[in-house]
Each structure stands twice: as C-alpha cells, then as structure tokens.
Image 1 (spheres, helix red, strand yellow):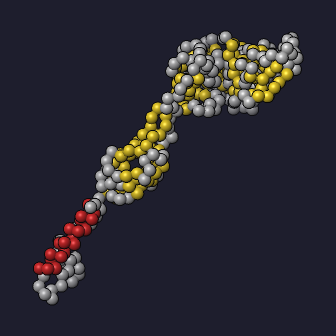
Image 2 (cartoon, helix red, strand yellow):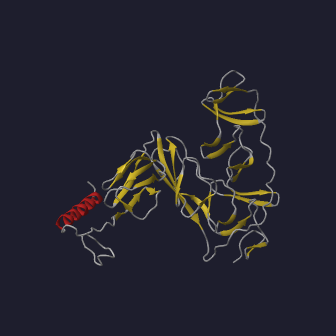
Image 3 (tube, helix red, strand yellow):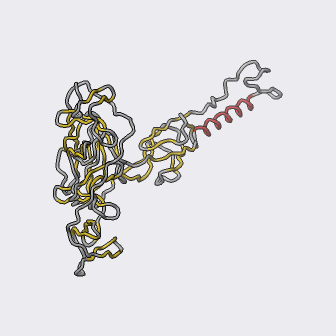
Length: 365
C-alpha cells in the first residue's frame, strides 16, 4: 500500500470514530462556517514530492519534482565514440517500462532517485583508438565520419597496421611545427599531440575577410611511362589488367593518368608510400597540382608527392603547412609572421587589420 493510500485510510478511520462517538442528531462539521472551528482531525493531504538526478541522459518531462506514481519520460544521451548504451538503472525504487530502450518511461517511487543510462566500451576487434590533441588548434575540415571531438581531442578508431593520416588544423598566430611522434603503422592505442611555434607577445591579429583570389591553374602530369592497361569491374571495385593479362599491384598509367592498385584493386583517397603522401581522387586518378580534399587545399608535385613548405607560382607565394594543408590567415613561419588570404596567396606591402606587412610579407613590429 502506498503512503498516499495509507494517509487516506487513516483519515477515513478517524472520521468513522468521531461519527460513532457523536450524540444522536448531532451534526459533525469540520472547517465549516457553521462550526466556526476546525476539528483538527483531518490529515494533511498535501502530497510529498521527489526529485530525479540524471546521469548520461536527460528528463524529457522536465519537471522539478514528481509525486509517487508519476510517469516520467527519459532519454539516454548520445554515447561517446567507442561506447554504447546497455540499460537504465535507478538508485532507489521505481520501475522502467523498458530498461533496455534508450527512450523509455520511468514510474516514480516515494523517494529521490538517480537514474543512470549505463554505457560500456565497445571492443573493436582489429582496431586501435587514435587520439589527436590539437592543443588549441582548430580542425580545418569537417569531422571525419565515425570520429568524435571533445574540446581539443579528436578520437577515432584506426585499423591495425594502417598508417594514420593527420588532420588538417590551424591556429591563428601560430604555425604547426610538427606532431610529437611520427605517423607509422598503428599497433596500439596512440595519442598524437600538435606542437605549435609562435614568436612575439601581445600579438593576436584577426583574419582579413576580403574576397579571395582565384585558384591558380593546375599543371599537367608527367606522361613518360607506358600505357596499354584495361579496367575490369569486380565486386570489390575496379581491377587493372596489364597488357600481359596479369592484374596490377602498384603504380600503372592508363590514358596519361596514374593509378595505384593494391591486391589488384584500384585505390582511392590518401596513400602513404614511405615518407611520401599521395592523393588518389574518387576516380582513382593520382592528384597533381592543386587539389581540394574536403574543405582544404593541398598541392601535389608532378610526381604526385604532396608538397610542404613554400610554393611560388609566378609572382605569388603560398605556404603548405607540415600536414600539407594550404596556409590561410596569420601564420608564424621560421620566426616571422605572415598573412595568407583565403586563396592562399601571401599578403605583402599592405596592412591587414592594422598590422603592416613588408614586401616580403613579414609583419613589421
């Protein structure tokens, strides 16, 4: 029997006793204008209320307090990367309509409770957890599918034996010098930390918002290797058949364009070979010259190798950061501060946000 039911029964019994003791013909009145007084025998029927504290979830009903028996809608929060929801638990009484559903109804007990949406770590067989600590940096591209971001930390899973591709990041007033460790085949959970360099103090200029210049023309790829290959579509993708009937593994040239096959299948996306990075477009073609990947521009030489450092095209200078991403905004490079427009073009002989740049593009203090 609930507390409310007990209080009502107690009141009914008390009134019954009074009625039995009253003289015949005597009317009983409580808290009425006729009696002018209160019997003092009515119980206080104000119902007690209780609170809910949520862990890893939220209360959709969103009341401050609840009465015993109230039905409350609850929802589990979104699991962090590598986690999954298991079930609801309560620190006290009460019941869940379905404790194994992320969204369910909780029936309130006569006490304060803490409701927990329990999460467990998912073991991803054959994969390792990789974390990038941006150390104040900003992701230049959208968050990759399956990755999560918590403050400066990017977290995701990488297949064992694969080489990690560092994200394109930037930080105004700083230059990404390097990551704290080399990018090698993943054999365990690994954390990479960005290392930034900056010169001077009290300098925090804002980026210019003028209309960007147009992107320079892409140079033509080298065409010095043999041709004569044909494509065959398979269930795993496209296979490249050589003139001798064998299936290609490695580099091959078809119609003046370079492709790379692994285990007989055409590859796409980023491709590390030794210390050199290449990019293969969605059609499999090796990128040459300027290439936009996501929201970030990169430059690849005639051999397909991703370029880093300074790049001059005509009278225009660009800078490719250690990750290969084209520099934009303010960047410290070898102890000097430069500004690059959204097109990547280095600003020179001008003022940006009140800061003067000389003919070499360097900020003049």
